[in-house]
Image 1 (tube, rainbow, N blue to C red):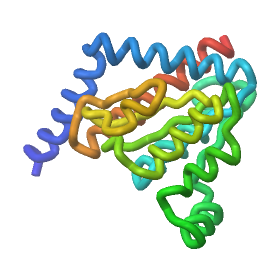
Image 2 (image 1 turned 90 degrees about the vertical axis):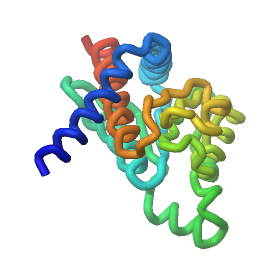
Image 3 (image 1 turned 90 degrees about the horizontal axis):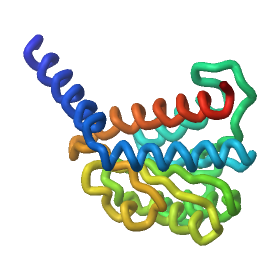
Length: 190
């Protein structure tokens, strides 16, 4: 059992090390931080969506913005698209694939920012949400796995975790989230 645990932890460490040594990815992460700071500074709203574990990552992003991360500061306008009543109402009456799109079309405005989490980059409801947000003038950032999937070509920026393994991708996504929020807090509230 100890060897299995060691193997899992070594793989997680290898993937995070790959992020830290990938200059192109670090540059993209820097661009995402700049957009994120601009959105927060201007008082626009940050939105987020995803499925399964990615739902939890999207919700985690929002709670860190509305509440706080490391600094005492005012809340940053943020909302996720995972309200249970809205999701189940729309999905029951219409379909699940358009549930995030409906919310993007309802809430997103020019200058807002929508984060779409999808380990494959191909989640149809996330793809549709980012397309709708772009049409409405919002900026879009996708967090995906290694290939980027369909979101790579739809989002303004795509943060691709260097792995095809779902749990490793999700671990990198939460690292991206914490990195971006820490930069926003330092830039806006120092």
